Amino acid sequence: MHKPPIHFKQMSWFNRCIVFCGVGFGSGLAPKAPGTFGSAFALLFVPLWLQLGLYGSLIAILIMSVVGIYICGQTAKVLNVHDDGRIVWDEFAGQSITFLPLLYLQQMNGLWVIAGFVLFRIFDVWKPFPISWADQKVTGGLGIMLDDIIAGLWAALCIFMIHFYFLT
Image 1 (cartoon, rainbow, N blue to C red):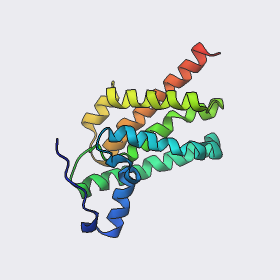
Image 2 (cartoon, rainbow, N blue to C red):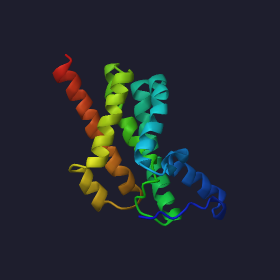
Image 3 (cartoon, rainbow, N blue to C red):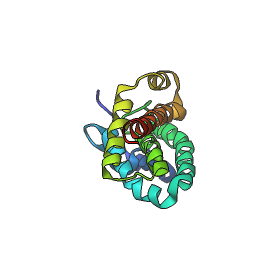
Image 4 (cartoon, rainbow, N blue to C red):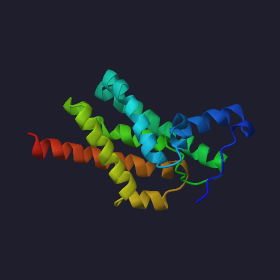
């Protein structure tokens, strides 16, 4: 499927800023697997989550998610697309949600971060229920965000289960 090019020069400054955020500061413009690149870019937030701790991260991720509904919806509107692969702000939120159990368990390390990345990508690509339902039935910015939020919750649940059933 051919994706129309992004013409930043034809946008207002406000929409340029929104679209720049929506495409993950450019990470979503990768020619192949933009969602994976957006999720990988979200790994740069890990030091921030460590600095903020569990409760600060929860608040920041909640804000990121609520603001993301607008950012993703407006980016889709400006680009005249629906849930275009280049829009990866939703990956930022979903990938970040995945790491919340690691903050709670104080287990944030390289191996767990890689495991969280892989788990989130599996759920984001595979889209088991209710992720598939959200992806197909919910529209606009909320629809763009919701499937990734649920994928992040599923991946977070898996991290909890792995930790408690296999490592304790």
